[in-house]
Image (cartoon, rainbow, N blue to C red; front, top):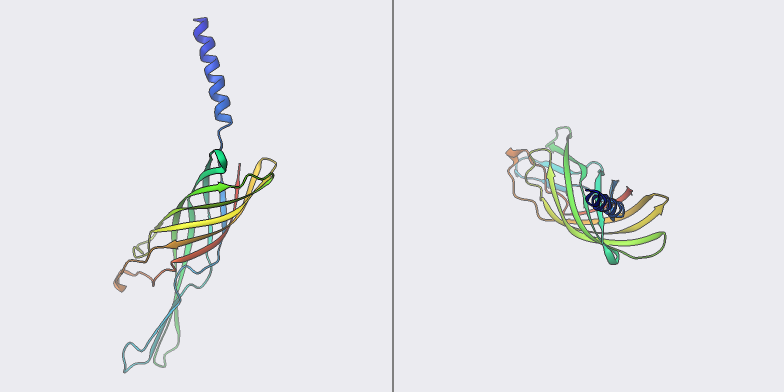
Length: 204
């Protein structure tokens, strides 16, 4: 009985020590988009008897925020998974013949889930890193036409300040082409397949 208790205690101590040294970190990442969510398009003269103009565009840049987790592997390698919330801003300005200009604004919510393989250069204090991997997207509305798969690449710095890691980063995502949709579905114009953003991560 005593021998079993000693072995069990030893096992728990070793397991606790190993868990404490596990290279796993969690944190919060936020930033701003450097590109518009939707393409800027102008359509005019659909009916030759009526002069009309329709302008689809994003009326503001989007912010990004959400949790992330990273597992650090040997040789400077690692895997990061993010869950980033991003509002999508869409506006339409239309004018028919000599009528006043009318504008409508829509706000959509989206969640992006990039999974990045990372390489961290092994330098003291400040460690540059690069990352790349697939990214997936879902929306909180019925705009099903938006592409939901893409590929992301990024580069940044891992700065250790006491027990906190600060990670400024520039990231680029190339989304697939949007699906065709009907106007009756209430779907907006085509999204921008090129997405760039500036992010800052805080992790422990």
